[in-house]
Amino acid sequence: MSKLDSSIAVEIRRLAKKKNAVILSHNYQPGEVQNIADYLGDSLELSRQAAKTSADTIVFCGVHFMAETASILSPDKIVLIPDKKAGCPMANMISAERLHSLRAKHPKATVVSYVNSTAEVKAESDICCTSANAVRVVKSREEKDIIFVPDKYLAAYVAGFVEKEIIPWNGFCPTHVKILPEHVTRQKELHPEAEVIVHPECTPPVIELADEVLSTGGMCKHAKKSAFSEMIVGTEIGLLYRLRKENPKKKFYPASDKAICPNMKKISLDKILWALQDMKPEVKVPEEIRVQAKKALDRMLAVS
Ligand code: 13P
Ligand code: SF4
Image (cartoon, rainbow, N blue to C red):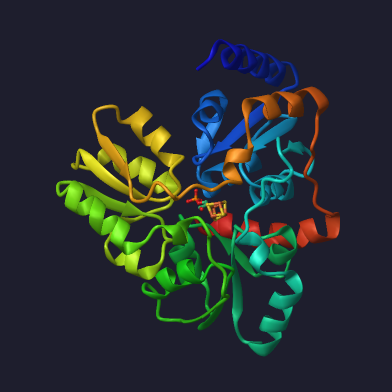
């Protein structure tokens, strides 16, 4: 870390303490952001932290839907996102209106929305899920027909584990689709002793090549206990910083170095400091939508 970065980091920590703010960071954040966070995790782990924190302010270092989820779960807290433009393109691939029409076509179906969705879409859903609990959440529903939005690849992955009719939406993650099966095959040729771990947002041909399919938090736990000392990692490359830091004796190779989420990289130490100094940009969900969306999130948290 440069001298300037370390003085910014010190000032961030000082201000966070003074303002009773907790800094949550997703596993894809730049290394210097991961390092100053109070908690680092996947979507499910960070939702849990946001729901139970006693801090007055949550600084969410991730993308917009994650900060929105924190605000839905903890409405009495101030939720700040250091860059308001850090959005998730997949979350914007479905609107509440479109989901409403889809539900009207399948009146017997239950709606499961991946947390990578807007508050309005969550408010139209029966239950949310994350990549860590999607199979468990779908299994928990009594209904046979499941509308699953917005990620068609996560939907396809879940369909392999349940005896249910999955009605997917045609959404996808633009970062994970950059990981191609030939990238994984090439890495396997280069590192024949390595275990292959991939995220369920990857396409089915990539998932076919994996030894383990896990959320980012699941990958971190798995890497510690796995007998393999080398791993090919099929997800956004930011995760490799944490994997390498926590497992210095193991080797991690990105399945594709093109798997970069530009939105996750919009957060920087400067922006975190400005957010704490100015107490903005704030993420707040209109109360009517929040109350409905919270029901879907609470049902998910009760399942997992
Ligand atoms: P995780 O919940 O597994 O961290 O995934 C979040 C995400 O945005 C993956 O692209
Ligand atoms: Fe959204 Fe994909 Fe970025 Fe995750 S990696 S935040 S799903 S665009």
